[in-house]
Structures are given as structure tokens and as C-alpha cells.
Length: 319
Image (tube, rainbow, N blue to C red; front, top):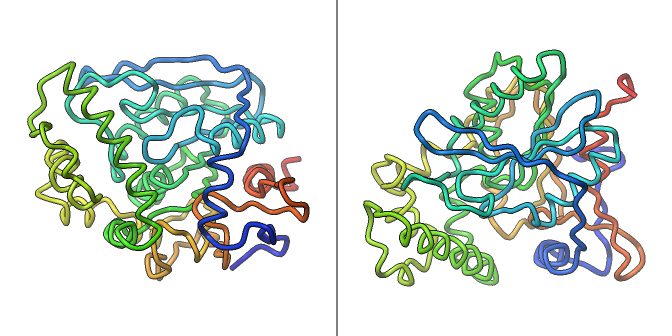
């Protein structure tokens, strides 16, 4: 259910597409000072983290969406908003997303929770006395919810937020093949193909990369690239095992899920039918995909997520 002071979309940005596209195209990107850290992994690969300025209090781990970067509008927005609220942020870049291709043929995918566990272990060792929160967006939200459902008794994360999650990957793939949603599919697939070509120039991959342009849908890309590179039997096996939808019912950690029914990346049927005891599910009629732009004056937007997420991470008793 929506919060009492919940989201009200800007009247001048009606519908899921405008809500999605406006911040992507027009939001200024301003990042606070960041310190890069590289984690060397046991399999010979690496993960990069960006830390905001050291300060006391909880740490917030941020998980980006598909092909997200430090310049994604939600990364800059959330980092700035959380920092202004007195929280220190740590941005996890999935393998190959920090500006440098990763070292192995495999990269990242919607159900990869092992790297998240590695980063949480690292943060817990470094700051054993500090609370850790996490916020995941889109693919990153799916990873976060799946991990929380896999580990219902965990104590590493005290609170979590997930925004615009593709709970059912098959549903999302089919939705992105239809209507105006094909715009987003085309944009993201171009980025994925470009990243794969860059990697193929550096190393030999166990897949055919000579005809990537024919992989014109997520189902085809995931069947011929994502699944074989990450040990799945095919696209359906990947989608079934990696979707977070059924894991949400097992979550006990206090977790806020924010979703819009007009999200152009999936249909409302993707929403989980059951939620765990720790879950607050806020579903709004509008908001698009990681949009949630409010404001009464045209071109004077208010980014509602920048208020809602810090408010959940700084409840009244902790202020």
C-alpha cells in the first residue's frame, strides 16, 4: 500500500514513459567526492566500490541497474540525497560496470548474489560496529531481494530498499518486446552488445560474438549470452532461478519495495503475490521505471525517491 505521504506524479509528466524518460534525459548529474576501492576476488576477477566521505552512522550500499554507471541519474541522485541526510554511501559496481572490463568471460546477471555477499562481508569486517543498509534499483533491486530471501535470518543488513524491480524476468522480457517499451530494450541491448564486443577484443569468449546485432531481444540475448556464460541451461532456466518474485515471501529484514503500476519494463502481473513479514510494499498507479517525479511547476521537478529512501533509512527513533 502507498505511504500516507506517498508519491503524487507531476501533472506535466503523465504516464510511465514520461516519468521514466524525464530524469534519464534531463536530470543534472552531480556526485559528491568519491574514493575508489578495488576488491580482488578469489576467482581472479575484481569488484570496484566508490565510497563517499567518511562519517559516523550507518553505511548504505547502493546496487545499480542493468549497465548502470556512476553517472546514472539515480546513482547521483541517491548518493547526494543520502549524503545530505548524514549517511555514508558505498556504490557497488557489478563486474564490468566500473569503466573497465572485468577479467573473466562471465560478468553479472539478475540473480548473481555471490558478489553481493562478498561486498557485505568486506563491509562488515571493515566496520563491525556500524549498521549497514542497502538500496537496489531495477536489476540491483532484484539481486538484493533475492539475497534477502535466500538469507531470511541474516544479520548483516539492518534495512533495505528496492525500487522498480523486475520481479519476474520472463514477464519483463516479454513486456520489453511490445509497444513503446521496445525503446528501452533497444537502448539497453546496444549497451550490452557494446560491452560484450569490448570484452571480446581483450579475451576469447566461449560464445559466438560475430553476429551480436541479431540478438534483438532480451530473450535471445539472455539465451545466447547470459545463460551460457553463467552456467544456466538456457533462458528459461536463467529466468526461473534468478527472478526475485518468489523470494520476497521469505524476507524478514525490514525492507521497503517501491513500484509503479505503469512501469514500462514489466506488467502489473509481475508483482509478488505474497510478501515476507519484513516487507513494506508501496505500489503507486504511476511513477514509471525509477522515475517518481513530482512537482507542481513544469520543469521544476521534485525527485520523490530522494526523500522517501533517506526517510526509511533514518526513522524518527534514530534522528
